[in-house]
Image (tube, rainbow, N blue to C red; front, side, top):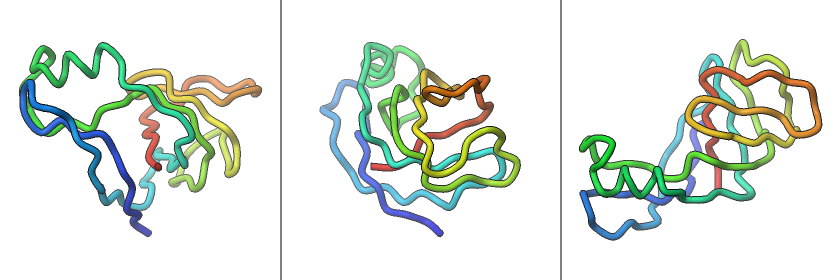
Length: 111
């Protein structure tokens, strides 16, 4: 089932970011939905906001996050609700306190 969540969005180059409500779908194959407990906006996010990476706005900022797994899509290995996960970059994550390799195509979504 889809969910409404809040995220930090950059709509245009150099413009102030805003917190917006976003609709996310249920997790698809290889995806995880996690209720985010902590997320930072880092220097890379600032580069995106300034158009330094590319200019395909809008951008949802914050790619380093920690949260609790709520649901998983088909074929997701090694994590089950309610495990704690950390997303350490673009397309990678690892569970805390467990021996788990990076999960491909993991997308942290929540609020």
